[in-house]
Amino acid sequence: MTPDHLPSHASPAFPPFNSPRPALDSFNLDSKRTSSHNDLPPILSPAFTPPATPGTGTPALHRPARSHPINDASTPAQSPKLVDHLPEVHCEVRARIPTIHGHEMYIHLYTNSEDNKEHLAIVFGDKIRSRSLDAVRPGETERDRMIRGAYVGRLHPGRTSSRIEALKREEAEDGFGLVFSPPSSSSSPKSSTESIATSAEGETDQIPTTALDVPPLVRIHSECYTGETVWSARCDCGEQLNEAARQMSLPSPCTGGVIVYLRQEGRGIGLGEKLKAYNLQDLGNDTYEANVLLRHPADARSYGLATAILLDLGLGGERGIRLLTNNPDKVRAVEGPKREVCVKERVEMVPLAWRSGGKEGIKSEEVEKYLSTKIEKFKHMLDRA
Ligand SMILES: Nc1nc2c(ncn2[C@@H]2O[C@H](COP(=O)(O)OP(=O)(O)OP(=O)(O)O)[C@@H](O)[C@H]2O)c(=O)[nH]1
Image 1: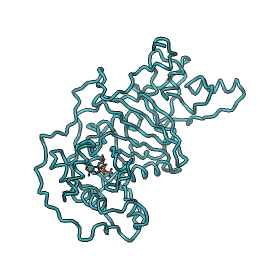
Image 2: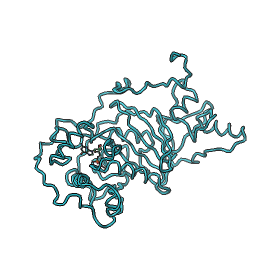
Image 3: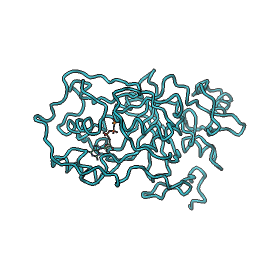
Image 4: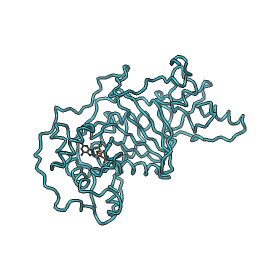
């Protein structure tokens, strides 16, 4: 059977994701990261004195997480890598994922104008929706919309409409109760640029993205294959991902949230270079020095994609977000060049070993050194007190 003979739902409007895949033609490829190898910090001395008794830095007392208003005077003045203008992003597909913890999340896969990687938004709760996903695409059928995840409520066998109004009518006719009730009102009017799914009869299926009581919790997470997938105790990345998901799954007032998962492995240098950096660390350098010795910036990441994804999810504007991070660069950079996103509050990420007084969490000489370097050299806003 040739592709022409397949039903419409088997022939998606976008090409399959091969790797490597050329960037989308319609995007402006001039949008480049502002970080460059030209402004490499000077090579640092590799001299390094290991702690006298490695791995004993875990404090004895429990250390709860704190949140900080964003004008916190303790925030060090940093010069984060800001992009000149935001890249374009487009949510191609979304799917519901039940988790092993009993909660559900919606994975949103994005393409963008800056690279050909599959960046993700992991959305907890049903109030946050992607505008580019919900926008009507030319020629698509209701089944196409459901298959790419642009539906409201829940899918079930036999469902024929992606839209809530049609679904309500169908269920009333069938004599079944409604399986999903969208929130009743929105606290702010729809902007003229919003793309909201509209049925043929002109009914809108808008789920208000501004109806949350408190600014939603957001984590901008950078990929870490070693820490998230193969149990590395060199860093706390896997633990941080778990903790963000745990907090976003909590009941009110912390209902919902978004983890923007950026494919910036190894603080942007890639897995191969990160593995070299680990060897340099075993030779006595810290994580900052190792990057620099490999002639990379100590941190090669940028956050314009994260800002653009948050805007697509309706999280721009005055209501703001609460950002889960200790990284001062991230706080400013994620707001975007024109403060398109407003970080109202920073919620710190306390290592589990610190929170539990050493009963849980990662215990290793390497993670202790990693955390100390983050605090001392990357100026992460985390203290053991
Ligand atoms: N180059 C390099 N990257 C690392 C190393 N350990 C972890 N990473 C990467 O660092 C990134 C996570 O950065 P962190 O500095 O731990 O945390 P952060 O995102 O800056 O800050 P938080 O928001 O507070 O977690 C991921 O992309 C990891 O792959 C390392 O030793 N060398």
